[in-house]
Image (cartoon, rainbow, N blue to C red; front, side):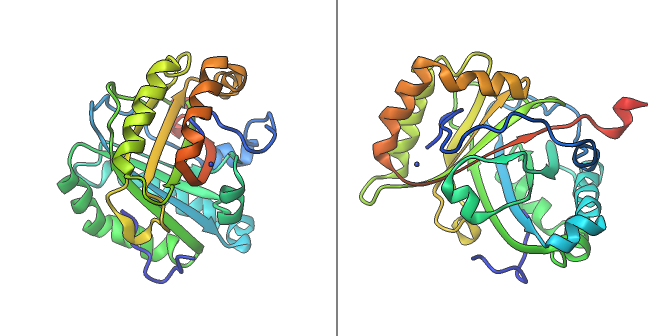
Length: 264
């Protein structure tokens, strides 16, 4: 996990609850070039999911320091044992008021077969060096969550995939495990969204999560497939069933780009 001691820690969308109108576009060529990602993630049935949302300084984005940060994190894919998958890159769009208030500009998503693998990644010298040299100097804020996938099937991520991330706080008096059960039933009823693959579970690392107790990703083959889900009646029914359980939700989308070598 990214350990950023120097950085202050300052509704559920199923694959698909949009609180703000869609802006139908792909990242610019400059943004896409900065968002290099590894090849398709291995289909681990119950991966440990690790997400860090990063709000970079405006000057870092304009100077190229943010792109260097992305590259340094992406390079960990060949340096850290036990790291099954990693993607670092810009956020495509913020989809809820809570996401807009949090304001992340970039994110890191990585996967591990076990919790010890995640713990080893956190203290690995190459990871620590990347954080100290590139993340800490350029980040205004960071939010991190970890969960064990509670979905029935794996959710592999391939280059070009569009991913929706949801982080949620549950209503007072509700156990997070109850929400996990409801989400499992809701995604099954919604058909897991016409080609989407989901991973969800209870956050087990509260220290840097800003109170978010639940995480979920829905992976689609393209932005167009993700956008097409907005009008699906079964998905809307599933969202309606889950809304009363939720207190606050961060929802955002990002695109996993092909690695630089793939274009050679």
